[in-house]
Length: 76
Image 1 (cartoon, helix red, strand yellow):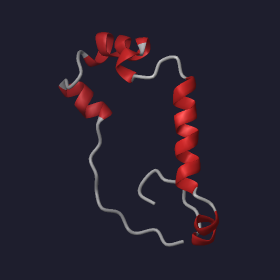
Image 2 (image 1 turned 180 degrees about the vertical axis):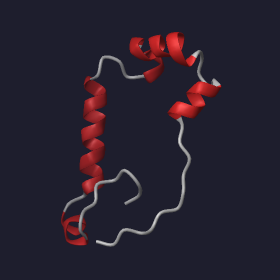
Image 3 (image 1 turned 90 degrees about the vertical axis):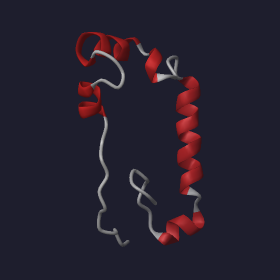
């Protein structure tokens, strides 16, 4: 249950494979998508051309990338 994962109690996790259900759902959404790769998305291409300049540019790094920091553990 890392960051971005659904928070479920241990009782629910023992009865249902939440990770499998989530993965199946994400794969299903991906299979139905007409644009499956972000670098092929016309909107993303336009944003880079008009604003971010190029992948890996200083502006792109600043706005699109994140840094990580340790957080307190969440107890259910």
